[in-house]
Amino acid sequence: MTRVDTIVALSSGRPPAAIAVVRTSGPSALAAAEALAGPLPEARTVSLRRLVDPRDGSLIDQALVLRFDAPSSSTGENIVEYQCHGGRATVDALIEALLTQPGVRLAEPGEFTRRALANGRIDLTEAEGLAELLMAETELQRRSAMARAGGALRKELEAWRDRLLELSAQAEVAIDYADEDEGAMAPDLTSAILQLASEMRRLLDAPRVEPLRDGIRVVVSGPTNAGKSSLVNALVQGEKAIVTHIPGTTRDIIEVPIAIEGIPFVLVDTAGLRESDDVVESIGIGRARSEAERADLLLWLGGGDAPDHRNLIRITSKADLGTAGEGMRVSSVTGEGLEALTRVLIERAMELIPKGDQLALDRRQHELLEEAQAALARGAELDDSVLVAEELRNARLAIDRISGRAGVEDLLDALFGRFCLGK
Image (cartoon, rainbow, N blue to C red):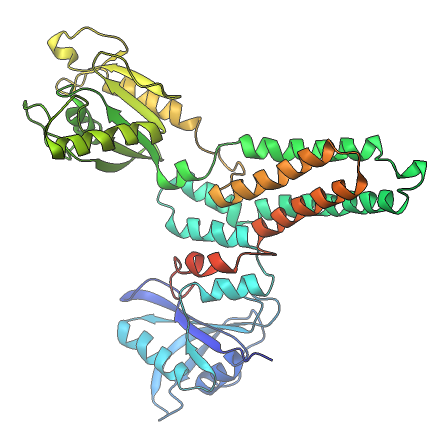
């Protein structure tokens, strides 16, 4: 049997602070706490205790002690939390004293959450949502992450998995009677498979997590001296990009994160598009074209033929100079049209991000659900019960990989490496 250590870490922010929360989890958590605080209170009951260093009997601090017994804890193990004063020396002394106890060691990044996953307290989708919640900087990001961390996707996946098991059982029955008339694929089974595939497709067609998590990528593109850098500076109300009258001033990609009404954007200033013999500028122009292709929203300044883009916004810049052209009239000097452009950016962005608490997928989850939905679509077209059962198994395996039931060991280290030590 694999030996399980007891882990300890500071779970609150870095000191100094008014209060710090130190947390232990594992089989020795209760014994270690008793060595410092004496007999513990009942589970889920807070008690004020004197914390004493068991090595020399010196007082570390007076702190609130709270225990959670396995399996009814966040990790599924015994947990003890210490709410002590938040000075650096106090926190260090408490953790050092706990580390002297048998079987106790410092936690690795994300190890508390990883144990919760291993012990079935959460699934992989909730862990991913929790990682996003820790990184959330806007209200919309927080709400979306809370929906995922709160288990909304887990419930949907569990319901689909249960239905896949039922459909698989029906397909197995058809296999058993393959030599009889009853062995043909029943129309109601095919209908049920199509219905489930349709439900998955609706989630697949919904906005993804990445634009909300990483920011709506707004690429400002167009010919040289079209006012691209000036527009970026005007939108962020700061000097983020160099502006001169010399064509080709911008030669590389400049990214400026900004939040507008709680929506995260990344404004991308690019090199002006033209023919150039300058090696450095030519590299910048190539990058500008690549950025235009991957943009969520593409602002095209200046005349000429704009790129073919699903979310193109044409802008006539330098409106203060009486410039003629197509699209919205904007002046980075006088501010004309900036408010209207901002409203358009918000309206377009709202079409690309999840609405409120709407369930959303990240790239990994989307690709796996695509596999599951495609397997169901193939199965619905088959009349061979053996082949249908195999496609149902493929769909179930993809669902299990989304939730972390199967085939995810390779991504766990990367996921939990994003967490802090106390999480």
